[in-house]
Image 1 (cartoon, rainbow, N blue to C red):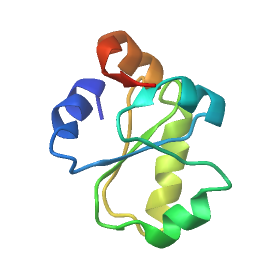
Image 2: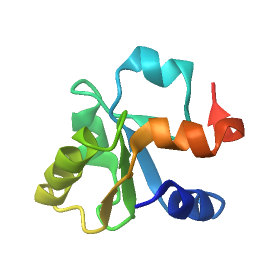
Image 3: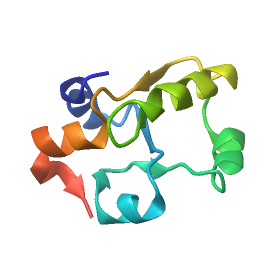
Image 4: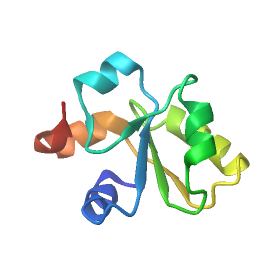
Length: 100
């Protein structure tokens, strides 16, 4: 999913954004309402998540998120996207839409 596409769906809160960057990077800046997903938080996320809700996985550059998205699909999530260009691309295109 492109950052422009994500930006257009964020307002309706129809997509869950999970950010797999390290906690420090996440704390210093993130997409609004994103959930920091780590090895520690993954079990709770998998237990509580709506498997049919659209999920967008964000990493630094959009590479690691592809593998994480595939993992979520293997866990029976039905609508999963990797954010093209990752947080770096989001920060470049939408610098005023970063939550800190």
